[in-house]
Length: 326
Length: 195
Image 1 (cartoon, rainbow over the protein chains, first blue to last red):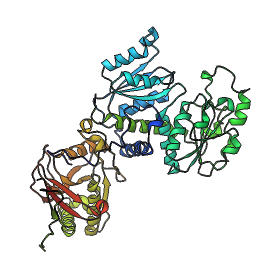
Image 2 (tube, helix red, strand yellow; image 1 turned 90 degrees about the vertical axis):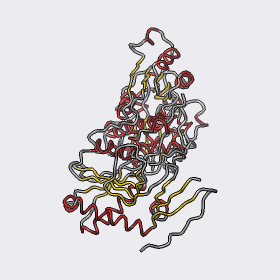
Image 3 (cartoon, chains in turn cyan, orange; image 1 turned 120 degrees about the vertical axis):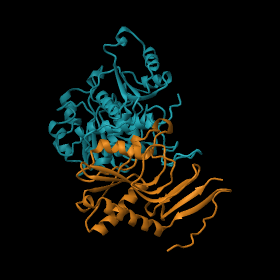
């Protein structure tokens, strides 16, 4: 313990060069070192509460975390709520349904209301890409993007990276295939940026109609043929076909999509022997993934949910501890 | 066994650095604490119910060393672990985030056992307060004791060590650094006096 009268720079403090940005809006804002700090912190938190009867830490006592959800979500909202509660923060859940938003309140006015209530962190899920960025300009607290439109979902990418690291050891040099509806997927974008930063070799596989314009500039390879991309991969991440975001017809029939881009037992066997299967959920069983694969050996889909709580605890701890320069 | 201790070069103008304990002093001190533990907790130590929980970073190395010496003296393995107190600190709000260190609880947990917290320097007592809070969430030991290599005074809380390697009177502006081979490449306790 070194508290002394003369100010000493404590070597245990996270150096400013590693610190998280003020708001967690995009995995593109994270350097490899900062991302690794988040994953290491998550691993330590998991270790600290493993096997304990009281799975609660007093770390964020007296802090307030607002879950601002404009879009339906089960696992992300519950995961953030549990993470904040495990760190003893006070949690306020705000969903657009049943709030003043349904009476026509704007995002800015809602933000100012939260600001007046003294939110230390705002976890924001919104159907419009960029909404958390706007929000970050209006509130003093830290904004965490919990999914904005088809743009980004940084904590999902972090929990996927955490899950990958637990099973594969090192992420650098691993070959990871991300399959499916990349066009509507914020998970894919966040994952490509983060995994590339961490040194993985990422391949996106999708029908051309489900790839966004400009995908050529992403730090990854693109393939249209799943059977060509899968052999020897260390992990495959299946994306949900987001029918609620699809206005037009992106593929002829569900059966055809499933046959060309679905993960069945035969394709599962193409992975490396240690290969694992991820899915951010919720799954369309029988569409992008066969139930036998989703529940089979090497599937870490259920574990991802548990890791989500740990990783979000790490993010909240790193963002919210320390002097608030408000 | 008294010997002339080398005077280390001054690191900055006006400030002095002095070695308080050498490598052999530290080894002897650890042996002495191990014997004191055996004397005071002989029943628990004999039945393997003593758990040495080090506070990272250097406290956990000291706990490992103490455990190794205890098992030499008793002839049965002693249990050591690590308890990171970072998430229980009372200055997280003012100080900024800290990297977390490892927590390793012994198999079988700490319920009903004698836990001896091990740290390198006892100063304000706030780390030990945090450790006691953390322990409470991990289980209910039968007895908790505290062993430190150096007690430098200036307590800010009503906390006192059961086993003290060396009492060192210091000024508040002094800094006491414990160096251990595991982290620093050599063993020593050094006192740096501000100008």
